Amino acid sequence: MYKVKVYITLRESVLDPQGTAVKSSLHSMSYDTVSDVRIGKYMELTIEKNNQDIDALVKEMCERLLANTVIEDYRYEIEEVVAL
Image (cartoon, rainbow, N blue to C red; front, side, top):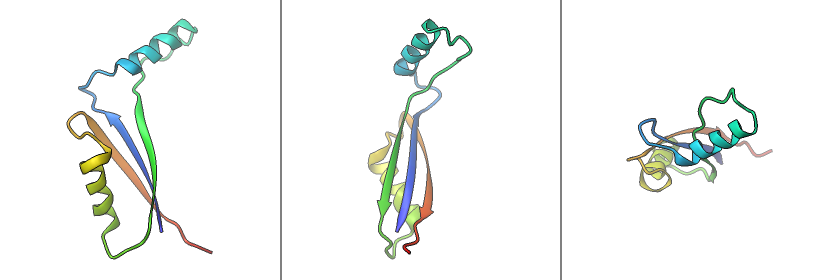
């Protein structure tokens, strides 16, 4: 079994109004040292072992459904879970 952590963020060239609003709120709360905020998504997938290449499988899921690759970048970490 695999545990996959997927991180999705807006590309640097895409405006992030939610991040801008959070930054503004932080500044209004006197957290003036925050220079930028970018909002993203985090997902954890549990995938059963099979004959498929896990890396290719996760990449395909990200490209087809999990991330909008026109405006978002993604990265992932794959951890093999060993049952005791």
